[in-house]
Image (cartoon, rainbow, N blue to C red; front, side, top):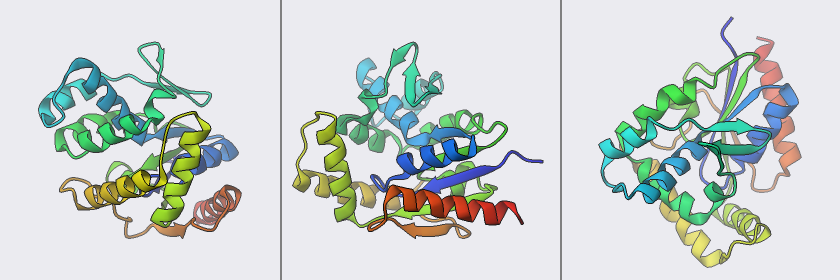
Length: 220
């Protein structure tokens, strides 16, 4: 049988990562944070001086990445990148590199390589539409831009990063616009995805809902 995949897509700061990691832990599945890959590409581009408008050069850089996801940490070439990829700068860079078709193609095989028994929970923008179109369960997780900005603000402040709600609101609106209107793999729900608005839900409620949907789907 094909290794099961739960694909969780949605806009920035919708809670995908926290929810996906919790679902993976509950099921004993592997976890893929696809957004981390684009953040790593963006950071590596900044380190190497690779132009953010050169899709082919960025794709060549992306093809060399060999990140490791273990115990909630992300390492690249022996360097712990867990905190670095959560900065607003990394987020801004990832949004810039993700618009290039060659970059998305270069990362496609890497993302699919995470599909190993007993199963995978993958979160991102196009997990259910492009990367794993045959996913066992597809979820499109969203929340109001105000709720997402508030969550992002608390997350950044909690980690000691400077942040303002006004700037975060503006950034999220711009990023939503960019992600939903890009020519390649735009942010949108898969036709067969379950849609879930988490604006007024606790993380535990969202996780429980997705686990319920998976149980129903897996049962046939």
